Image (cartoon, rainbow, N blue to C red; front, side, top):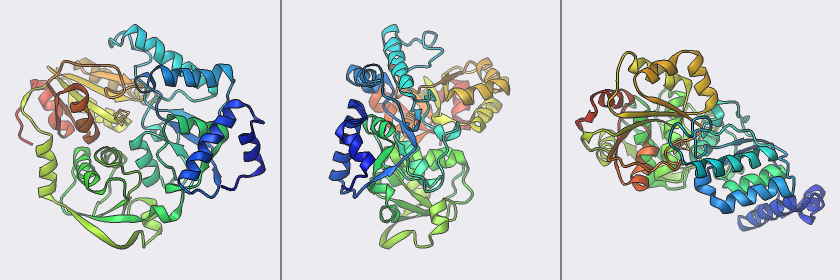
Amino acid sequence: MKLTDEEKKMLSGEYGEMVKKSMDILVTLGDIYGAKKMLKTNNVHSPGVSYRVTGDAGLNFVKEAAFKYNSCSKCSMTLNTIGIDYDKAEELGFSKEFTSKQRELLKAYEKIGALGTYSCTPYLIGNIPKFGEHVAWGESSAVAYVNSVMGARTNREGGPTALAAALTGRVPEYGYHLDENRLGDYLIKVETKLECDRDYGALGYYVGQIVGDKVPVFENIKDPTLENLKALSAALASSGAVALYHVKGVTPEAKINKNILKDDVEEIIFGEKEMGEVGRKFNKSGNVDMVLFGCPHASIEEIKKIAKLLKNKKIKSEIWVTTSKPVAELGERLGFNKTIRDSGAKIVTDTCPVLSETVRDYDLMLTNSAKMAHYAPGLWNLDTVLISMEKAIESAIDGYWGGDL
Ligand code: F3S
């Protein structure tokens, strides 16, 4: 790989041990994927910041970078969802030991210069890359969103490569940084009405399991909301490993490039039948233990809608609404959180069930997120139902889901 003089200095250790290690990681990665050069970046969203994911090995690595080598991020760097609600860890029953390790890890990241956003939707709270900007993001749902909806360019970074990008301000030029890898591999013909986030999740789930890590191009999706596309991004990246998709007439690259598809691509139909298949996969009647909204972390519009549906109601099942702290603070100011809390539901910030240490003795969870419906059964040995927000809330009020989608 061709390196600039500055990059050679980084690699030789002139800027310290951690910069050298970081450049070493990036050059090795670039060599594996045939990168010809490095690209400059000024925007990192780091995954792997839950202590549940890093364990002691990751914690010690970041602590060493922060406190032994005094490393400093060259980029604007936001942090993904963590393992605790930072302010309510004790109240929500996170163990003292886990909470203390998680806080140590965050202190180390913050010493490096990272911003403690603790959210998988950094694009809702100020990390908004420009179209075409080369960034280094992790967290699969956020990667799919930033590549597809915002038209920025990133590969799916892990914790170590995101940190390496932050310390050097560089990413190797391969994968989704290159035009030729951003064209569509499949055409998805949507032949059914998508009415809510749950339906977008079902679409993404169905398509993700067929296309794997390829690039799907959707047609016949009309006026999706930010929340619809957030749900689609997360679902595509959970049943599959989709990091980029296009929606004709909607997402920026599909608008600019009329030839967004490669030649002779395979077509996939998504109609009533396919929607029904996903619905049957995630459906089981019974007493509802938990309802989860906010995977990926809820927007203020979602919080507003939940508040409206829960107004003057009392719930029998537990409800968690997971979101980022800034969105929760806005919900607080606007009075939505109080309405939600008055029903018995909880607003939980910074974390989510998948990345926290909560192990629950539950049998049935309802969610409008295909990503959560996909991961929760493996984590807690429970059944999940993929359902609209309205039906989930009605069921939480009754404490029971009858199974009629
Ligand atoms: Fe975010 Fe957790 Fe879902 S990190 S995307 S809320 S699994």
